[in-house]
Image (cartoon, rainbow, N blue to C red; front, side, top):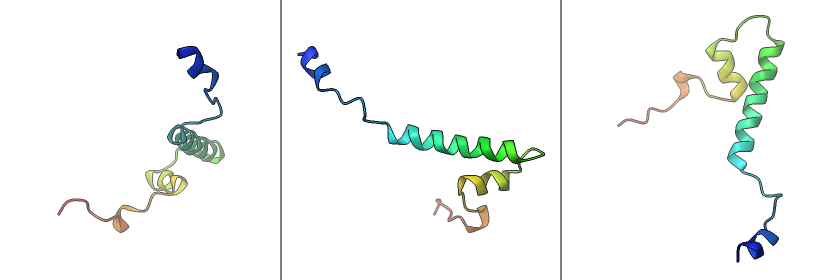
Length: 61
């Protein structure tokens, strides 16, 4: 049965979450490479598309 499963295994299927993480990592690496100094937390958030803390909604009631 395992040989039959392997025969139909589609190797083109990707882990979407892993690919998204790799893309975010590459965005950070590109920003760091362009910067002439360490990035601030705000700059990292901007690169990652994270909203500033003031505009985030609190999750606690």
